Length: 136
Ligand SMILES: O=C(O)C(=O)C[C@]1(C(=O)O)C=C[C@@H](O)C=C1
Image (cartoon, rainbow, N blue to C red; front, top):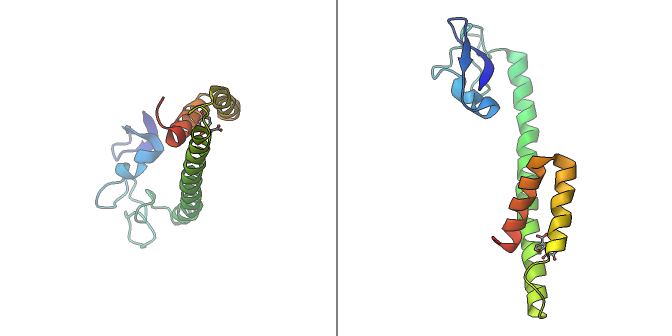
């Protein structure tokens, strides 16, 4: 996959993982390809971990990452809460002589995620359902 990371040679760098792999694109010594100054003020250094030497870009990246981390924490909590609730529904139903699964309900959930998020939504919903009721 091509990214906008440019090597010192001036040619485009190839990376394997897009945004998630961006940090791996930064040279280990923190020196940027274009030799620009980072937050340290020393020429040719990056602001640690941001992948850029441009101070205002680095500051914005740090700010955005704070919100991303908040979102990730919320997603993890919601994921765990949903799995617990789904397990409780299943246990309640089975203890009352009902079925382990309700496939019509699963189809409804899959459709909701597909409409909102497309094919990735379907995959996400499948993982959510599996986390609650276990594999089919
Ligand atoms: O809603 C239910 O009846 C559940 O058991 C919860 C849930 C789910 O995780 O959303 C899990 C298993 C069922 O097959 C359908 C849905």
